[in-house]
Amino acid sequence: MRKILAIDIGNTNITVGSFDGLKLVKKEKIPTSAYSFYKRISRYSADEVIISSVVPLALARIVYELNRISKRKVVILGKDIKVPVKNLYRNKDEVGQDRLVNAFGARAIYGSPAVIIDFGTAITFDIISKNGSYLGGLILPGIEMGLRSLYEKTALLPKVELKPAKGIIGKDTVDSMRGGILFGYGAMCDSLILKYRALLGRGVRVIATGGNAKLIKRYARSIQIVDEDLTLKSLALIRP
Image 1 (cartoon, one colour):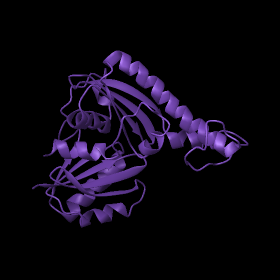
Image 2 (cartoon, one colour):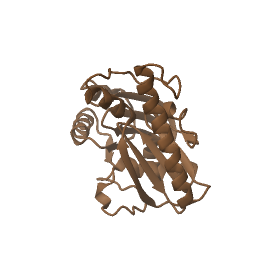
Image 3 (cartoon, one colour):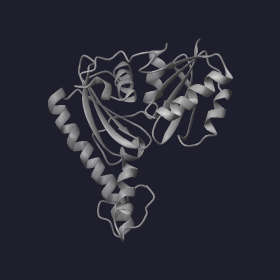
Image 4 (cartoon, one colour):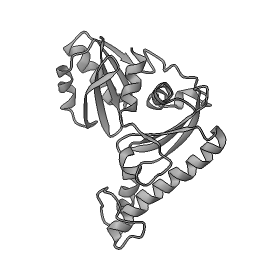
């Protein structure tokens, strides 16, 4: 069985998944800014490496390190291989490879039509038609970005760690900020999903991924599936 190393380079974190075929056997996440990561790649054995990246400098560092330490084949999504999805974005080059590969993997694993919500540094909504075409989506500030902006852009609000909100009526400033962000984003998700269901039909799958997907699921009833490893699984599916 082929061993595949899938690497997803995001703005905040780099996530690595080691696959035996399509089985994820090990996962590691480290901040994108941590230089120590590039030396740790040598610990992974794989027949092939496939990379999706939205950070060009981090991608260049990883490719250099991989080429320096081994002769494993390195495949870069968008450059060496295209995601097998019909892209209906007006300017096709503007769509991040992570969004397209999630669309491919979501349809293959869960079916379509589908709405994929990626709760990363930014929040993206990606819409997949019944026949698997990528229709487009939305981009919003991420949950932690929103919470941080309250502290950075105001004079009196404190810096608050992202934790579950105690209730929809905050009893102090910290609870009010957490509740505002989490219940607010949850309500936004539910409202948008209602609109997408009206367009795509009631059979649409709603899939959440990204680092804050599990947390926001408590506040967004419309989310049906949480798959934090969707991008890694999708990368492995492209290179069976």
